[in-house]
Image (cartoon, rainbow, N blue to C red; front, side, top):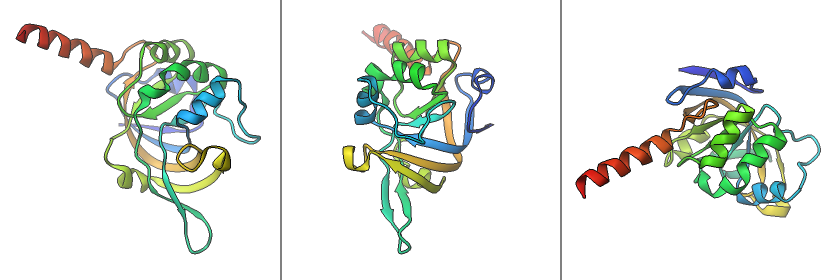
Length: 191
């Protein structure tokens, strides 16, 4: 088990390999379809928000205010990442992202960007939204809430020991590509 603390260094990211289990602590920014498309088309991050050496989490958290008026995350499960494939490589490059968290993996463009720029894809457990929300210690801020709505906003979350597995590393390896190839080979043998 490797413990990672944000901001992430390129050296720390490049030391990871497919199959490594990690516990991530620090700041994570959520970002889904609307944010990725907006940034891909030339939009800018709000003042005070930086993805440099940071983490984007493909997540639309369930967030509500407590009796004191503070935001509280009640569910924070990963969403399917492949929808961001048309945008992710550019965002890794342009915004200096070091890790992307999601589920289901990503494609060849993201794999190439991870290798070139020093980034990893971290697979989080789908169906464990409430368990993962327990890792969120604080909502530090929210951007684009009015522009995109709650699930698509950028939520700045402070996490402690968020569990994930490296499934795309910065060396050109992809567990998703390997599983697809072995599945296709098994299917070919059966047919």
